[in-house]
Structure formats: C-alpha cells, structure tokens
Image (cartoon, rainbow, N blue to C red; front, side, top):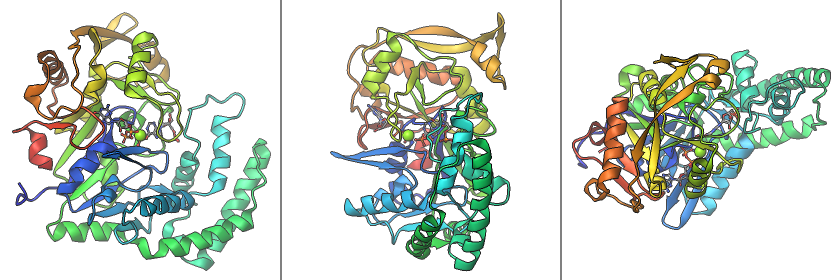
Amino acid sequence: MGLVKMGNVIVLGSQWGDEGKGKIVDLFSERFDLVARYQGGHNAGHTVFIGERKFVLKLIPSGILRPGKQAVIGNGLVIDPAALLAEIDALEAAGVAVTENLFISNRAHVLFPAHRMMEKMSEGRPGRVSIGTTSRGIGPCYEDKTARRGIRVADLLDRAVFRAQYDSLMEEKAVIAKALGIYENLDLEKIRAEYEAFAERIRPMACDTAWLLNQAIAGGKSVLFEGAQGTMLDIDHGTYPFVTSSNASAGGACTGTGVAPTRIDGVIGVSKAYITRVGGGPFPTEALDSGGDKIRRRGKEFGAVTGRPRRCGWFDVPLLRYTAAINGFDSIVVTKLDILDEFDQIPVCVGYKLGGKTIGTIPPTVAELAALEPVYDYRPGWRSSTFGMSHYEDLPAKARDYIAYLEQQTGVEVGCISTGPERNQTIVRSGSRFASLVG
Ligand code: GDP
Ligand code: IMO
Ligand code: MG
C-alpha cells in the first residue's frame, strides 16, 4: 500500500456539520503529503482523539497532528488571527510542531472584532430571524470579502496598506453600527496595534498557497482537502438562509485553494449514521421525542465550539442523495454507528411529502422545507455493542443490514464506517472505491 501514489481527495460533510470530519481527516492524512482547509473559519470544531488526548481544531487542518505533514489554510478561509495564534500556541504546548508545517494563504481574509459586532445586526436585532450562528463574526467577514472591501493576509502584512484599509473599514463599521444601535466601544487603535503584532507572527507562515499546492501536485505529491461545516450549510446549496457564509461543498475546495477541478481525483462525504444540526433552520427528520434525547445523550451531541446541544434526528436518504449529487461523492463514511447500538428500531427517512404529494428533490424555501413530512421506514436495531469494531465481519448482522440499506437507498457506496472517536475504531471496506482513494 505504501507504494501506491495517492490522488488528491476532498473529504467533506454531507449533512449540517459535525459529521466527524476531523477524525476521518486525521486518520487518513497519514497517506497524504499535504492537508488543506478550503473554507470557513473558527466556526468549525473538528475533534480528534489520539489515545487519551483530545484536540479540537478550528482553523488548522486536522492533518497537522501527523508529524511531517504540511498543513495549508487556503484562500477560501476567514482568519481571526487571535484565534489562529491561540490555536497554534495550544497545539505547540501539547507538543505538536505547527509553525514549520503550517502555510497560510496570503489571499485569505482577516476577521476583526468589528465583524463580531456586526453579527448582532443579523442575530440580535428585533424583527430579524436569528440564524443561531456561532457568533464568531464569520458571516460579516465574508460580506466584506464579497463586497470587495475585505482585508487579506497580504494586506495585513504591509503596514502602510493595512493602516489605510483598516481605518477606512472601521470607520464604515462604526457609522453602520451606530445607526443600527449595535455599536460597541471598541478601542480601534489598540486593536490595530494588536493586529500589527499578529502580522509579525503570521508573516513566516504566509505565502501563495495555491502556488505551493500546485507545485506539490506537479511534483507528484498528494493533497487531502478538508471541508468544514457541511453541504446543507453551504451558502449556495444549503438550507438558505440558515447556512454559513462559504461553500462547504466540493466546488469550494477548488475556489478555496486554487487547485483546479482537473487535479481532483475523488470526493468523500462524511455522514453520521443519524443526523444532527446546531442552530436554527429547517430539519425534516428532527426527533423531538425521547429518541432524539437518546441520540444526544449517547452521542454526546453538544457543540465543539459553542457547547450548544445539537438537534438530533434520523438518517435522511433524500438529503444524502441531494448532497451526493452536489458533491459527486465517490463513497461515504458513516460515522457514529455505535450510537445506534441500543435502539429497538431505527427510523430512516426514505422520502418526503409536501402538501400530500411525494417529492423527489429538496425544495429551496424555508417554508417548504419546514412543511416537509418525512416518510419513514423502520429498520431493526441490533441491540449489541459495535463500539470500537474495526472489521466489517464483526458487526452484528442487523448493523450490516443497516449499512447495506443506506447504500441501496442512497445509491452511494459506504466505504468506511466509524465505531468510536479514536483512530483505530474504524472499518475500511476492502475493495471499495474508498479504499482505492485513501489507501
Ligand atoms: P466534525 O466537525 O465533523 O469534525 O465533527 P465534531 O468533532 O464536531 O463532532 C464529532 C464528534 O463525534 C467528536 O466528538 C468525535 O470525537 C466523535 N466521533 C467521531 N466519530 C465517532 C464514532 O464513530 N463514534 C463515536 N462514539 N464518536 C465519534
Ligand atoms: P464543523 O466544521 C455545525 C452553523 C451554526 C449556524 C450556521 C451559521 O465543526 O462541522 P456561522 O457562525 O458559520 O455563521 O453559523 O452554521 N455552523 C456549524 N454547525 N458544525 C460546524 O462546523 C458549524 N459551523 C457553523 O450553528 O447554524
Ligand atoms: Mg464540528
């Protein structure tokens, strides 16, 4: 296996985030030379367990935990330098070599405290439907990017350019915030000086990461692209407006790193054996009964970033078919199978009804999404522990049937199954497309 050259593979969330991408990327990054994040910011929380040690990665790709791997923060991210440097310091304190292995795009956008203040415009003002964001300022920073007034890492590194851009941007923010009654007395000069200091710590890691990645690929190296959030939180394809402000789906890997679609060899979706969502917005298969509580309790479904209880529900086949089409999944990883170990029966949504009619697609509006009635099939539970299993044949027959059922219903291969948070608690199905992509 060691001699087989890996291709370039995207690993991303197929639901509303927190599918277990961090664990999967950490595990398979061993086979790749570089790991690149392509969108989002410190709204992401990717949990990785290595033995007893727990790491929660927010901005830095999970591949950093593998000694010698190069980790890239692509141009598609929004970076809060204070959060990034705190993450670097915590990892280095835990013995992880970060600074020599981390490369930060000089075209990524920089997030400021004023972006958090601006988030109150959408989240706190009377009359606005709150999205239930992570309150990290992610949306407002992407707004500035799209409005062509954002400040990028390259701008931050040029003191004169930065000062001019910062002063002008902050002046605008103050005017808007005052008019909207959300103004906070931010000490703008103090913050500017802090950012000038951050710039000096970031400078040695900043570079043209698109060039770096393309050179590496041309030289025969392989790249694993790590998505944050999930396809249903994608700004274009998700449950708009209850989404994040970036392209979490596969296309984002190209725009968010500068690596062309012709260089991508495969796309892998990560999906829970059930489904969760944090924050507001439609969720057709949400289980508001004791079933949902049981998933939350067994799955420890509380946000890695905000600690909020995650909303829990049942596997949604039409949703997975939709995200498989958007992303072109070659294979999916089904995580947290062990959480379903103690259910007598497991509902699986196999279709939707809207106004009494069966529909085969995901409707675009919140009103329609909220009105969807899921049609459930009830699969027999296996009622025995699958926790930690690493061989497919060891799974109870009914658990294998559940996986086969998901494959048959979604039309997508389940090439990998996760049965616990640790690296070795994983099943890779031999002969699968998954195995051929990640070894
Ligand atoms: P991410 O954002 O997609 O990386 O996912 P999170 O880290 O936010 O949430 C997934 C949680 O489930 C983490 O606490 C993981 O340690 C844990 N986890 C991942 N896979 C498994 C699994 O197969 N079984 C169990 N029990 N926990 C898992
Ligand atoms: P990972 O990478 C789950 C959700 C928020 C909110 C919406 C918009 O760990 O899977 P934002 O702060 O991004 O503007 O919030 O998106 N959200 C996530 N939910 N996992 C995440 O990341 C998320 N990142 C954002 O809860 O509903
Ligand atoms: Mg998460």
